[in-house]
Amino acid sequence: MTARPSPATAWLSAATVVAAVATAGSLWFSLGLGLVPCDLCWYQRILMYPLVAVLGVATVERRPAVWRTALPLVSVGLPLAAYHSYLQATMTQCTVGGPCATVQWQSPLLGLTIPNLSLVAFGLLAVALVGLRRRV
Image 1 (tube, rainbow, N blue to C red):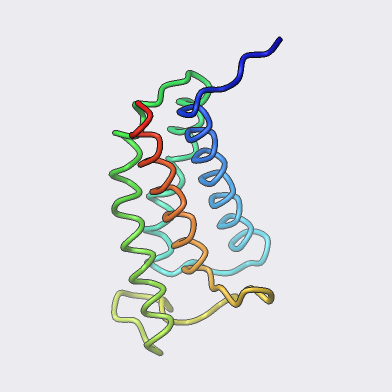
Image 2: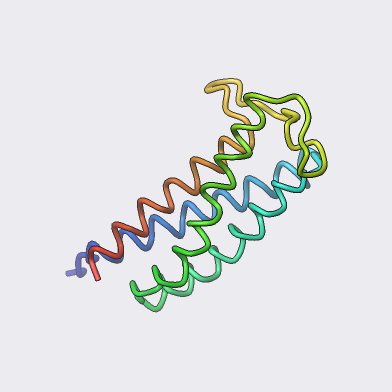
């Protein structure tokens, strides 16, 4: 008989998967499609990439208290991705640096841009980490 995973483990595993998919997606955009990340994209990557290792190790070690480490990164990444999405929706030029307002790729099915996908990922991580916090 196998033991059923705890709700905390399920939240932690979900957060790990979201961070890994977001990281793999961003690498595909730059390495696979050859898109050059703008400054805001780099900041979002700086906040997302370590979450793969932090959440991955915590999942293996079953340490749900990792939300204390991960939530600050997500709390900065979420508004940054929202701001980037806002820039793309409302402006043609970015004052931050680079082509932050330029749409380099858009999902053919949902019409989401790269910053929109980042916003979804950080949003899902926020939900998972708050859910994890409630289980600890």
